Image (tube, rainbow, N blue to C red; front, side, top):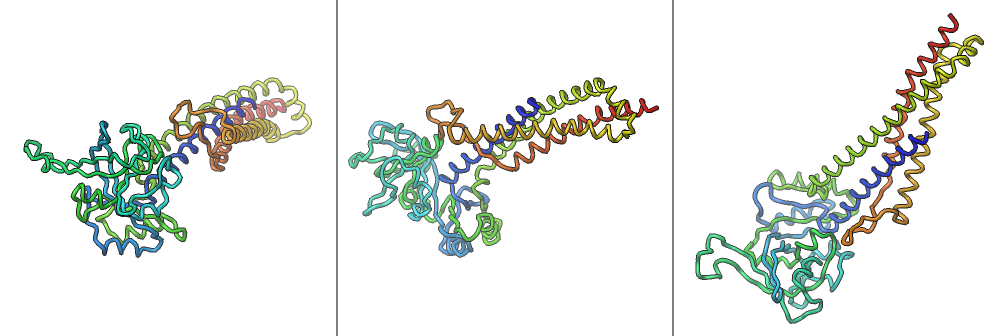
Length: 380
C-alpha cells in the first residue's frame, strides 16, 4: 500500500508540473502573441486593402484587427548597437491590452502629440543601456533594403535610417525581452518601404464567440491564400514537445507502478501458501472455488484502492502546498516565476487511478486463481 501510494503521488505531481508549465507558456504567449494571426500561405508579406480589412472586421466575433509589419533591423543608442526584430503595429494594438500588465517602465503609448515612441523589451534596454526618461538621445533604426548594392559608394542605396524616441519598457519572457521592439506601423512602413504590404493581421475576438469558432469562420471567408492560426498553432512545435514529454513522464511513472504491482503479486502468492489451511477449512465448510477466488481478488483490490486513494490525496496536497507556499523553486535568478508552477486536473486523477486499479487487478488474478485451485484440490 505504501509503495502504491508513493508512486501514485509522484505521478500526480509530475503530471501537475507539466500542466503548470503548459499553463505558464500559454499565459506568456497570449500576452505577446494574438488570439488569431492571419498570414500569407505563400511568401512573407501580402497586400492589405481596405476591403480585406473590412472583410475580417465583418466576421462575427472579431473585435479588433491590428495590421503588423515584422522584420529585422539594426538599432543604435548612443555608443551601443544590436540587431533586433522590429514589430510595427497599428494604433489599435494598444486596445488589445496584451502588454498592459507587462510594462516595467514608462507609459504604454506608440504615438503622442505627433511623436513616435518605441516600446522596447527589458533585455534590449539593458543591451543598449537605454536611460529611462531620456528625451534627448534618440533610438536610431537602420533597415538594410538592398544587400546586392553593398558594393556601391552611395549608402542611401544600401539602407534606410530613421530615429524614434524610446518609450515604455516591457518584460514578458527572456526571448521576447532581448529581441523585440514595438513601433508605430507608419514608422516601420516608411523605414522598410512596405507600402501597403503587411506580414500579418492580428485579431482580438469578442467574448460572445469562442476563438475557435471565429478562426473557422475566418478560414472560410479568406480562403486558401491565407493561414489563420490560433495562439496554440503559432507555437505548435513547442506544445507538441511539451505533450510528448508529459506522455513519456506518464509512461515512466506507470512503469514504476507496474514494478510496485509485482510486489503485490508476490505478496498474494506468499499469502496463498501461508493460508493453505484456512483455504482448506473454507472448502470443508462448503465454500466454493469462486468464493476463494473472490476473497483474494478483494485482497488485491483493497491494497490498490487504499494505496491509490492515499497517493491521490498525498499528491494533491503536495501540489496544493507548492502552489500556495512554493516548496520547490526554479533555481534560476531570471526565471519567469520563482517556483515550479503546478496545475491540478481531474483528468489526471482519473487516468492515474484507472491505470493503478487495472494493473493491480491484473496481477491479482493469478494468485487468486492458484488459491481457488488449492481449495478445489483439498475437496478432492
